[in-house]
Length: 383
Image (cartoon, rainbow, N blue to C red):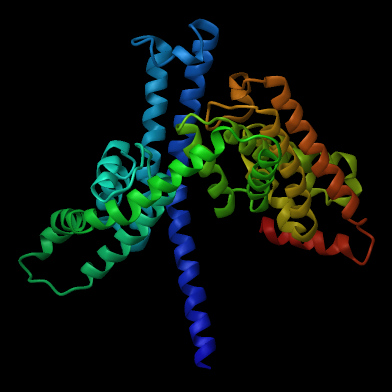
């Protein structure tokens, strides 16, 4: 009995941690999309009306420069916002300020470089990235929640949420965050960046397949976000191939399932026709969640097909050396790739692989009552 109670407590704790992390991600996403689209518009403007994307940050005062600065601001703030709202999910509003400040400070390469040198490690101005922000958010949240549970004099209670808790938590945790999260995170990121700069051949295939599978597996869930944020961290470091791979892999699932609905309409309930139309739009916009209705109705067949198409597409993108300088935007930022036609072609190929795979493994609706169960799943999902 005690073992079952322990397992139940562990399961509840892990569920709570997952919810806290996804809360942070949900608040971060608008910063990603807004900053990414503004940066994409800046690059597009510089391409067609300026001196090219390379010089967009050098033409101070131009329209492209202003747009690029706006986009960069959004993308710079997204990581501290992630840490701040993970802390908020754990501890409430008093966790926001310390979560933001401490997540921000471990994204400052010069600070981490100085801290690394103080303890004998070189970080080469690398940042701790989003994983560091996630860790900071959890640590800050638990500490703030504990402090809030303490009994304090009545005279101090009005100052607790607005001054004592935020400022005290920052001062208390700054050394811990800097040396135990920031420096190790920067060392790992520096190693990853160095390993991926000259990646080619079989290594590129493996990296592409892993990123593609992660993007397709849970379609916007935690695994998908880990792959995306990994590529985003590399993009900020000037490594653009992984971002192209994850964008292609994220666009493939909804488009592939829409194609499958057209190829074999008898295998899907009528409710999926409308979803196919929106799925194409969502897929072209780099919103992988457009495939969720299909996966929810038949996960054991649909998810492997999504993973197959996205894995092949992402690995081809990595091998071909396709780059993407914008972190979001889908079809709207294709011109910013170094090979736009190949970018679109690989999306189409991956979508066709997904469509062919799911069509082959998905039985006709009259086989073993498959159609009835799927229709029931669709109805339950819509309700």
